[in-house]
Image 1 (cartoon, rainbow, N blue to C red):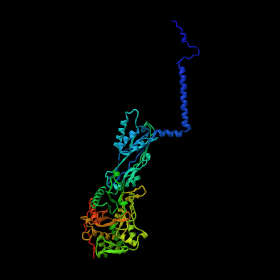
Image 2 (cartoon, one colour; image 1 turned 60 degrees about the horizontal axis):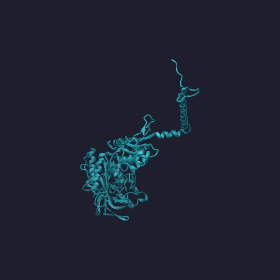
Image 3 (cartoon, rainbow, N blue to C red; image 1 turned 180 degrees about the vertical axis):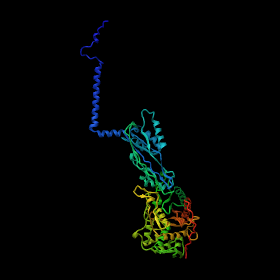
Image 4 (cartoon, rainbow, N blue to C red; image 1 turned 120 degrees about the vertical axis):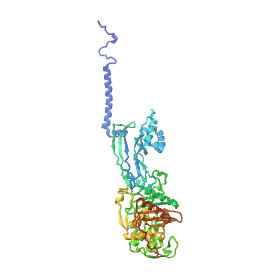
Length: 607
């Protein structure tokens, strides 16, 4: 079969390239590829050769997120291991403003409603230009945080014009105070440090949470990871620096005894019509504070609901004139110095005219024939001044300094005052007379209980402790039972003789505070009533108190109760004495302290 020639229109002339030729297409393709590769090459030279560091940083910033990994805060425990401040599972909610900016107004409304955060501040955080990380809320209960974020993701999942993945949760342990008001004045609470962005942190704002913030908080860690479209890239550059958890802080406080002490104190202040009060229980031998109560106080779980002035511990931060409780220091010093003894006889007039004003007693009387024990049992200001006349110049001041007056106890709580013990020329003869019976000087309650405890402890002052073991405060002080110091202030004989005189104070036939007695036990104590200084002057109100220890002949606990501004006619024996009796009875039973079986002494109070 013979083939027919192609029509002339289909014949290819020499050198002619037909359209659609594979060769032509390949040539054009190679040319385009060469152009693209040259562009890439130029860009690569720019990135790696011209300014590689700045572009690398920009790339890293664009796709990398840093997240703080909070350390677990140490617990605050009572002496028996009961938690007084605990850490439970919580979350922080953080935003990626690059993703949240388009939906910021709606998102801020939801978050403000669900998390009780400020709308305008949240809106600002959701719109921060150039940021990939902003805290929205801290220490949110885990279940609540996860629910809020999940609900928001659900809300936006079908919105094709506004895809959303800009919120996430990270671990952020939550602080809880299971005992609420119990020891709140000691424990304190946490809160935000007031800084913005990544500098924001949760820190201690009051009490031990504040004083031991670094010790408790540990050191936060950090996670770095790459993100794309608001989500973590699984195979990206991810690094983690683990957090170092904080240490537990164990207190000397017995939380059950603390609860009972607070309840008795509240009842005492309210019943007496008082303004405020303090009650402390100290282990006689070790100096450990088993209870340290203030009234009024607050709930550490909800501090914002209470006035800020309640956040402190008044037993350390407030000063007052101790009144006649101080007489036990004056009299024990006289005995230790060999200047007086319990049966020494004094003629005590109704008034003593000294300097510019007379000194009198709280009751009217003619000349009384009292022993030194009687002066203490009857709480005679006049008799105390007559006895104190036997001191050499500066001698009483030196004793009071050794008892700890005028110096901070440094038990670990911030804001403690040192009180006021006049020095040098400020100690005039008039001031000295009044200091002898508890006025013209000021103390805090921890100072005063530790001074009285010195007598209970056989004349040895053991420094008070609030922390078990040893711990360091944020200001660098090392405190605790392991570093507590002791020193002898008066002889054991002088302490014993003073105890015998103090025992007569609660004798219904001899003393002024029979309501402070504890059935079955020997009790040594002393009442106090002093004018209050308010705004630099005596305002006519009083501070009443009672301090004592039991069993008197083998002391186990020292207790001090103070009530400020009770109704007119109140006294230390009638107001603070019954509270002391309740607290001492409870403490002795709780710790299984049996009566010694000895009978109270009958040192003569008159001659």
